Length: 70
Image (cartoon, rainbow, N blue to C red; front, side, top):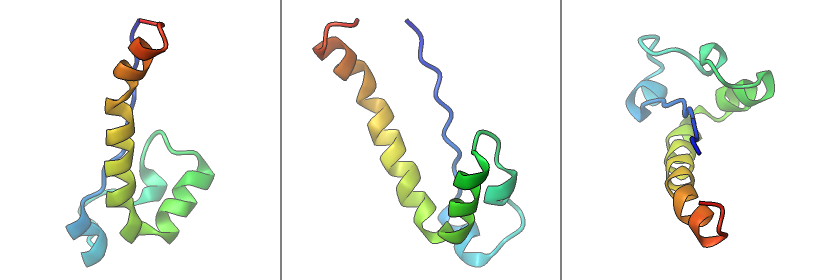
């Protein structure tokens, strides 16, 4: 079984500095229009959201073993 997960990452420094060096939330691939809009509205929250997503994704294999899928 193979899982492919894409997590868009935005650096805190670029978000807080307002830098155009990195893509804005509206240009990131993989986000729905609603997700991109929320990302734009709460750009300062996105590093924490990314960290939470990584933590959740890292727990998937253990959860699958626990429930007997793998």
